[in-house]
Image (cartoon, helix red, strand yellow):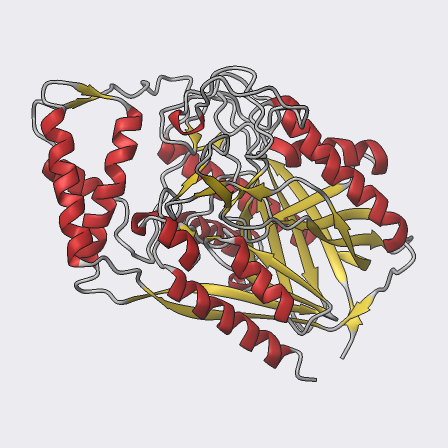
Length: 499
């Protein structure tokens, strides 16, 4: 039965006054300045029969201990709200603050304890950048984020008013596959395509932009929920705080709709996506200190600006903002104030991706060889990253001796003819495409890296090609888990839309 909609918005600046350790990449980075603020944007939806608070954060991820802390804060701030109906997602920017994150769902993939066991005493790591008084610590950052994100959620809930909404669809060319496939069946993230051995990009791309506009009782637009399959990673290597292309899109949208307009972005399944065109490769404006994207004398291309730089983030932000503005002209004609609204939270159980004995032995051999060659040397952060692949494999082998499955929470929502589902992975695009293509809903919204952070979830094709994002240590589960996830989401959608 359709009921009247109440909606409330809030935005809270997450940028601390101090410098931050920047989360993402494999090297130590401390912010030098703030390019664009990072924020938590919250939307509260309430029909009286059911409710939800959706929060989008300009963060790399939302770990389970962060989510737990936010819910604890909300018990005091809005005791009448059911904390299980809170949805918190990350745009997956790599220029946001690090914090003390803990995953309680298992997987044993970090490998830190394994590295300690295998590293000889005469091998040293680079000294990390000291956390002086002007840099927020990871523990301080965790508490800061808990309080600020809870504040955004609570304010949105308290700001609920009668509202109207209209769902629409747009297209924006931003996300592209970032894994290159070669003639020996191997693959590589950021792989060089300017070689005779290059065959194809491993996966496709999705330019679809799923949109819901919200309006006040007078019919004025108040904000938009945008669901798009690309992480916010144009300036991912840089040494500043930035909300990346979503921050640029918000600036442009507020120029059109006013400073009180809200943008609520959620990343759709995009574990193998990025804003960088591997075919029409454009070099970064300056060195990003990442050996994975080094090109030897690359030809100049007439294409996008470098999608590793601020100019590229503006180009991506403009494409999204312009499409949201264009689709608004159609949405404003379709406003309605009553809807059927359902929100359920269900446990999802998937299998641990398992390591074979040979994979375990190969990883141990590689780790021992690596350290033998490094005797008396000081290792860089990139050396440390290469060891984590093998250490993670060994850790997973040990973990799987006593653990076979893991459990996480999935949020399912129905808003009239729209379906929503969340997941805590960097879920490869193919899985999202399978769900959307078979969904019984008119429009399907899929939020990845939401209410947890459990690593990549690659396809079978990616596992065969291997490399980063498809290694066994890159995530908790593999393609068997991905296929189960698709079936469970589709089965739940079918039950939600049976009448």
